[in-house]
Length: 189
Image (cartoon, rainbow, N blue to C red; front, side, top):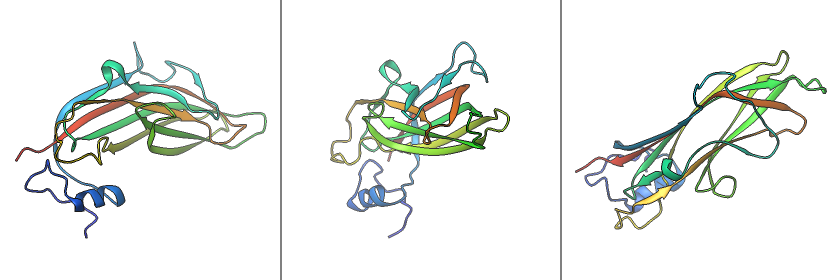
């Protein structure tokens, strides 16, 4: 079995083989942009536009919820998520040379929802160093639902959090903050 799922004759059907690949490996498929939502800092999305001190507890720094939640129209839809976050590593009294931040994306609820993505970024704290972290993830929010029920119309929310994985370190999210979500429908027949 290939790690790459090939385009099928009927892209709206999820076969048993597709479900196995989706749950255990890589999934790749073309599609059509159906919806795009985003959140940015307002009125300017620039470095220094905000100052959010981080702790060892996840802090929600952006979300696609309420009117900005994605209205998923098809069980085979994918959600393409991107984030860019500017942050500052702060030198603390312990003289730590590096500061790590752990970014996470949750589906449906912050912290208690499904954790669908995480990444860790480091920056030097020697001179209160600045960093910009960018990442992308593709979510399959409705699998494994019965593939015969292809039209589902479900609102799905996403939450971007940041935290310090190591106690004693210090960092602030300072901007920019951009969090986007795009629903990608399967290609028509």
